[in-house]
Length: 94
Image (cartoon, rainbow, N blue to C red; front, side, top):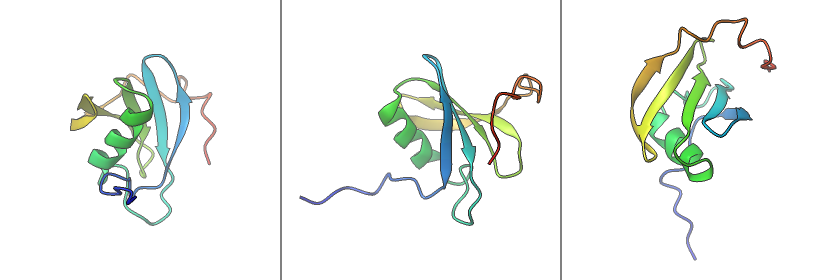
């Protein structure tokens, strides 16, 4: 049996927290493709495990944003300025 790897993410990222509504992840910036540039695959992969949840991520520049999607299909990026460093203090940075 051959495994379909067409939607396996190329970006290196880590899921750091999940809730019933959201998944939080960070781009590990290890030299491979960024989460931003691999958004379609990242969204599909995250949605396969945590369906229909909002996906919030910290990009390789340290900025927080949301990967907007419908049913696991990436739509667009949305900045999340409402997430200030005080609210993100619980997140352990690598």
